[in-house]
Length: 165
Image (tube, rainbow, N blue to C red; front, side, top):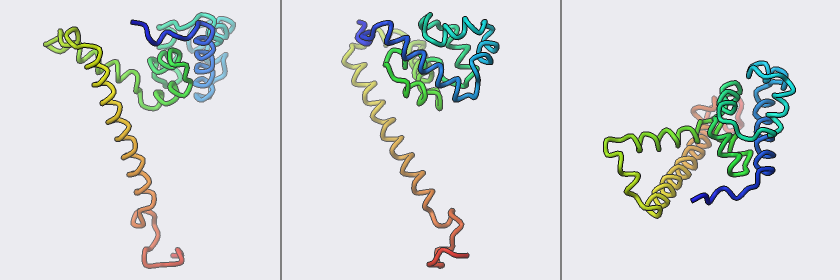
């Protein structure tokens, strides 16, 4: 079942290239610096960053370590065709955490549980989990907004109607 492999190699390489360049520049590195940190020649690094070699797991992991990104977020971004996914996952390690949770589930004493579940149950469970995460993100954003406008924390005197101190 390879339902996600609907992008051609050229599109995957283009996404990979955009992700790598964006993460490198976000980290404040020039390509020559990144090449040195990855123990690659500059020209080899440039070809790699252009997507020429495709997704190479060891290189992706090393690069992610250097630029403080989620390696699996980069890989998923290439599969999804979404540069934004790599950026979003870079902040919190979302893709790697997903794989850690799946690995923990697989390694449970009742390790056959994964084998015994049908695709519909898995899909419904994953979807429900992501719905809960979306709800938590909304709550977090609302909490942050409330905090920003909390008069006690803003330093303003609530009894002072003109905002002066």
